[in-house]
Image 1 (cartoon, rainbow, N blue to C red):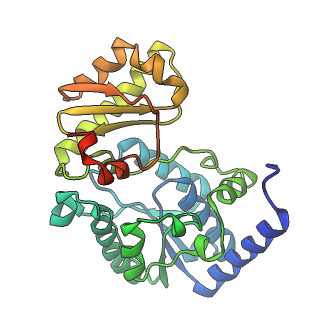
Image 2: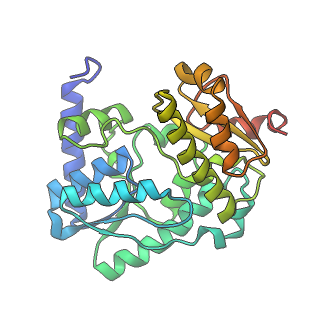
Length: 286
């Protein structure tokens, strides 16, 4: 057990989570496949039983194929029903425009779709995996859009932080307990660069190809992103691997083969939410 985990606090928050879930009675979990929504799904199953819980994994061009497979495997292992409704965020002008509020349009599409689905399935609420850290993380238009559409946030309401989510997931034997963050593909595209199916597919090809090239080269990475800055691809990997990746011609060739004109490796290494830096200083990529 991590020494940073306060057992009394953790027990209180898990009890609050259980109480909150019982109050809903039935639930449709917006299941992305990440650590947060995975724990929420497992907790809902424990509390409410499989007949009152459904996982909904939205399929769209912004969800990598590998994530679709992993989400399906997780649900099958847990013994919970999974549905895979299609979402059409690319049909929303605000999403395609890719300004700083893009995530709001994405979550609006998701929750509009899932709210209808929950009604059809006879489930009381739609829940997201928002945790207590997310709720105070600052600029999060997606969270605001979900709240505006009535989505509930059992993990956040119970006060469970990201660290606690991972610790409980580890104790429960969930494969997602140490899964790296895996934001949607559109998060790789620089704000102001229009989102399109072609760009999303190019980013996915680049990341898949790059991971394969690094594996062949014997370069181990945990976190990896290929950021689409237009014609330029900016690669982010663990800070400990930056030098090796930057020196690898195979790594650069893999990204260029996906359809980018030029590629650079970010010397600062992987940073979750790095694209938000460009909102404050767009001159850094133009």
